[in-house]
Amino acid sequence: MDKPIAIIGAMDEEVEELRESLTDRGPVCTPLPNLPLSTGNLGRQAVVVCRCGIGKVNAAMATQYIIDQYRPTAIINSGIAGGASKKMQIGDIVLGTSSMQHDFDLGEFGRPRGIIPRLPTSVFQGDPNLLEVAFHAARDMLPAGKVHQGLIVTGDQFIGSKEKKEEILEFFPDALCVEMEGAAIAQVATANEVPHLIIRAISDLADDSAPQDFEQFITKIVPVLNRILARLLIRWVNRTRSARHSANR
Ligand code: SAH
Image (cartoon, rainbow, N blue to C red; front, side, top):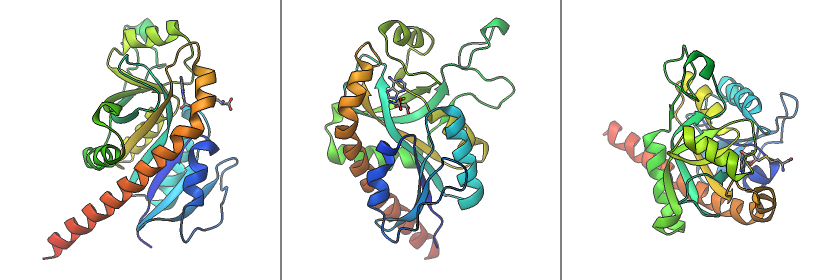
C-alpha cells in the first residue's frame, strides 16, 4: 500500500462525510480509547481519516499515534474555526501558513504569549507544497476574497466573546482564526519532520453569537471543506506522480 496522507478532524461532524466517501474502506478501528480511525482511498490517494477529539491534548495524542503506526507522508488538519481578523466572514477558508498556541503563557518570565521555551520554534510552518495545492483547490471552489492564508492560533478554549477575541488579537494581531487543535497537530508533525497543513472553514466570528453560529453553520460549511480536500488530493497525486515520473526519466 502507498503511504497515506493523514486527515485529522476534531469532531465526528468534521470527518463523517469523508469517512463515508472512502473507497476500499477498512473497518473503523479505535486502537486508543475514543480515537476512531479509518483507512481507505480518497480518489487515488491512500488516506487515514481520524477523529481526534476536541483540544490540544487529544489532537497531539492522535497525531503521534498516527505517525508511529501509519508513517503518513503528510498530515492535514481539517475543521472549522472562529474568525479572528476583521477580514473573516462565515464560510471563508483559512490555510495556515503558520500556527501558534495562543494560550501558552510564560509571561511571568517575560516571554511573549505563545512562546514555548526550549524548543527550536513555537511558530509551526505549514508545508509550502501542501499550501500551494490547497490554495488552488480552494480557489477552484471559491472567489479570491474567501480564501485566506496566514496565521492560525490554537488554544484549549472556545472563543465566544468580543473581549476574548480582542485579547487574542492584542497578542497575535495577524491571527486569521482561532481553533482548538491545529497548532498541537502542527507541533507534533514538526517534531517528527512530517509536512503538515491546517485547513479551516469559518463557522463563527468568535463573538457573542459564536455558539449559535457554530451550530447553525457547521453542517453547511463542512461539505465545502470536504470538496476542497478532495480537489487538493487530486492535485497532490498529480503533482507527486509527475515529480516521480520526471525523477525516473
Ligand atoms: N459543541 C461542542 C464544542 C465545540 S468546541 C461540544 O460541546 O461538544 C469547538 C470546535 O470547533 C473545536 O474543535 C475548535 O477547533 C472549533 N472552533 C470553531 N469555532 C471556534 C471558536 N470560536 N473558538 C475556538 N474553537 C472553535
